[in-house]
Image 1 (cartoon, one colour):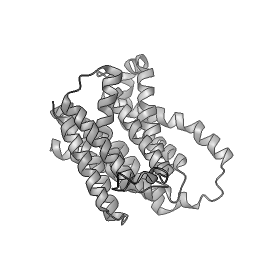
Image 2 (image 1 turned 90 degrees about the vertical axis):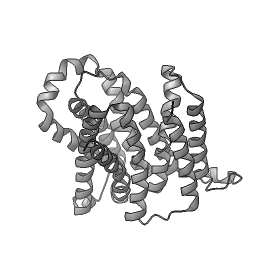
Image 3 (image 1 turned 180 degrees about the horizontal axis):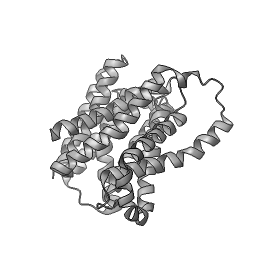
Image 4 (image 1 turned 45 degrees about the vertical axis):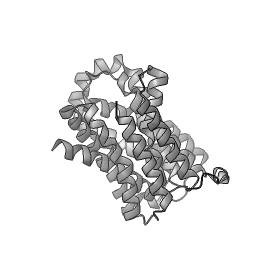
Amino acid sequence: MTYLLLTLAAIFWGGNYVVGHILVDQTDPIILTEGRWALTALLLMCMYYKQVKIDLPKIKKSLSTVTMLAVFGQVLFPLTLYIGLQYTSSLNAAIYMSATPGMVLLINKLVFNDYISRNNILGVILSSLGVVYLILQGNFTNLDAFKNLNQGDLWTMGSAISWAFYCSFLRKKDKTISGNAFVTVSSLIGALILLPVTIIYSIYHPTSNFSPYFQFAFIAGLLYLVIFPSWLSYVFWNRGIADIGATRGEIYTHIIPLSGGLLSIIFLNVELAWFHLVSSLFIVAGIYLCSRK
């Protein structure tokens, strides 16, 4: 059951790429991100209010750390992803995301001075080559591809970097704070940070047509984002990690880009090119080496 919960959590997060890509074609990514976390915070606060109340003194003591993690995990990660999905495919975004284990390794070395083995270094190199191979569309001599790199690719790369920082700095969280309380407060902080951003953005970029926000497709998609990647994924993930530990459970994060890419091909009819496969092999090989001691 533990392994099923971890797998489902990763698949739900992978579905975020597909649903997000569909929704940003109809709605604004800033409003979408704010709506997602506002509803998630409301739902989780109703469910886990007692746990939040119990852990509140510890949360207050580490508020700066919780806020920093919320900025990376609840604000920058989804916001840059949804902005990027307006201009690039969810398959590309998922492949960029798969390079995060290498990024985490580098951040841990540079910031926390963690030991990095030779396998880890080779893994980072291979993962980086995989990303570059994707950008160059399979031709290392095609340097003009960097000129054609659209803003969607840059935004989704930024999303992957934000997630890497979140994963690296998660060690700073007070481990005595319950997972449910932490996710609830993080969602609330994310929604509060995004609220003035959304208001200011709406003033300078007013939306004249609100009809897409009341259509069934948007409401269903938003409910998916709230219930699955924002709530159940975290609940399943925390329970699974509690059962088998973070070291063994971490490997399941690699299902996120895999499921995101596969769901994009199935539901969005994204064309799978050979350079997608080759770049994925580079990145998977890099991940394998990074996971070894």
